[in-house]
Length: 415
Ligand code: NIG
Ligand code: FE
Image: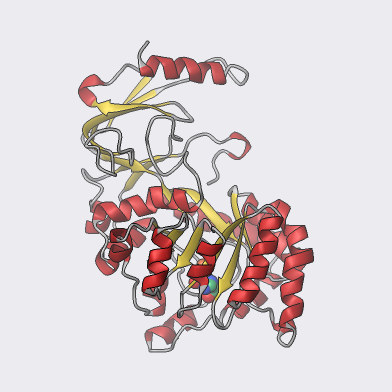
């Protein structure tokens, strides 16, 4: 039995309890198919197949190969040479917030430095907002990400910083994604200004107890002006004991020690990485921790971009994400993130695409998304372009002609 027939039978068997028939679709005449599966096509990390075909059902990729060998399916989609890529995995966003801070952006463009101080303004606005307003504004931002080709999105809390308030933000986030992150340690809330230790204790104890069941991950802003390495160590240790996976905002504004801490604790990802010592790079390369780069933040804070090319050269797994938030990166377009990484961080077009798909999946420790190998979720994008390189080449042009997001149980239709 061919691999395709076998997987169709398996799919039908797996779905027997839910429905009678599994419809399959074959995408024909894909000009350039990027699978990110090195075992197929040109055997590069991009796993590229030219003049390709791909067969999917509503959950999984069933077959990829040359169009000349395309098997039959229930329906065929003629792509006339368009490029197909995996859906983007945006592994770092702060989508649940109220208000905006364009005045700070204007001040930075005129020369002011970003120091994280504005986070408190968003905390005040978010605390004052109704849940309905937070839901509708989050939905709108998710829709913008979708339109740019995101099919998996991580969403953090961190703009309330009270026990019930953080739980409320996590509940809003959880309506849109399974990749939800507790960021109670974003900054010290104003009412704890002279009681740092009390706030750290609150996060480590009652807040984590309330919030851990609502999240998959915990994150800490480990930076001068936010939380020290020791405080971050305590918070992440408690989060790990509460069963959460770990992430770190590290080395955004200086050599904060966040990268070394993330590696020491086997965090899935350390994000920003704008200031890296040789030691940081060596430790990352030898670790299972992804360096997630957020070029929207450097763009919007007029900060120097990290040298992503060096990280790739040294063997670090790199992800790219939007960091969508009202302070440092009010950006919901992964195509622009890719273009910035190519133009300003030294990545090749292929390296940037890999980081925005496979890299994001690694940063979430997922192997079912971020690629189009057989068995992956059928999350793919049809571009109105013959090659994926157009994402950077035609920066700002909406090139995602079609987004296919595989069916996902109860919350189908949300990232
Ligand atoms: O990832 N740096 C910490 N958190 C966000 C910014 C938050 C804000 O300024 O509102 C970031 O850049
Ligand atoms: Fe962030």
